[in-house]
Image (cartoon, rainbow, N blue to C red):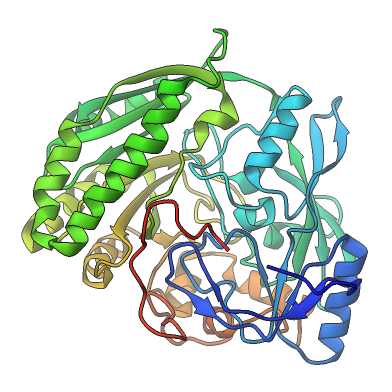
Length: 470
């Protein structure tokens, strides 16, 4: 987003905005990119007094309409970097607009790392924790569990420091808050010494993954797998700590991850979009083309995978004990309805936590995600799979598409009404609520799978690297 020259607050007339997948579009009246926390607080205070509506955007990687607004869109791109390091306690403080990749690089320079990450690293730290972003590994929680303190700019323009000791209720609510409490300007994270991981990928029979899932989760620091629809195969990924030397900058690894996994897959995906009956044979071809990988590098370079082929996604958290039964039902559902889908079904595992709106609240969890290539119909596929998720007490990932309403969510989150109470206290006039969040927190109406574009149908991507996330 551009800003008007000479505007010390970083304010400019709004332009059309869309998220990474193209599922959400809007035309904000105004864009703001404050350059420091104090400027952000002044802006928010002024917006509150004027009765404006404010939403915050990071990398635009949420598929739900979290950042959609026709009023003020605030970017934290001007608030980046590490501001404090306490090596004795293993804590770092980082500004909210810092992308995860940049944070990983900066931590490594200091001999540090985040203990776990998700599989995409373009999000900002504020966006990642606000939506409950997670990786995989039964000994690790979501990224929000790494947060030990945060700086929240409230609707009144106040700068509020929160932790387990200071404003503990606000802290528990804010660690996964969908941007509904205020703007998280900075966070303090618990970090670990920099570590190297051995990254292994191999093709496995999905039946073997299911039969041995408890052992694979227990014996590997990080384990996940991707089942290819209409096949008996899965791409299994294993990450384990090692003392071996890093192989950073490996040309073949970069070629495989960027060119083969993205460029070739984009061509195959375009074939599926243009000729949908090709999805089944292409999924089978993709399964036969799974290549083995054995590499060593620093952790933050291996957790994330380049995602240049755009898609729509729905992901649900399930109690871990229901994982195998749920995935078996998903396999049967796809076979029965013959959905035109070639994207794999992603399976990951996360430790329970105590964060009020975390999907992993009070339960060790499995996450199952389904995807559809951008430009291909996804609603019917997602709707059928979602019915399976809901039968197993599923909680939707806050950044992924879903159709759950406030009544359903209140029944799944024991602290739902405590969160609403804190939200109403901090923002009584709802300046941080857009139409989507009002549906969740202020009403019992249905939530749509996706907000309709405000300016027409979605267009197909021209190439896998086109149009970087706004």
